[in-house]
Length: 116
Image (cartoon, rainbow, N blue to C red; front, top):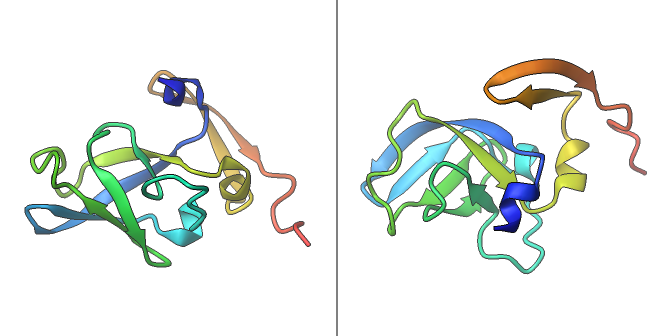
């Protein structure tokens, strides 16, 4: 779908599986923004599209794995397609430009901290 046309993702790690239907990742509102923009969830889990980014704390994302309970295990690294790339890009000092599985450049975010 249209997700394939999106260039920005946030790489995160599954740090907990408190229940069969829940997973916790180490990216929260400080990495993904809390903007919903009318969408269900706080972003798309690229590697597990049936999993819903159901909630965010500042440092953690709370995933609802009800529709795909076996999709994620602790230690998995997954990419989150954020709802609002404009906001997310300003949350980081640098971005990693990736081609395939290889980082080809680390670029500074010139506008970092300049929103006023």
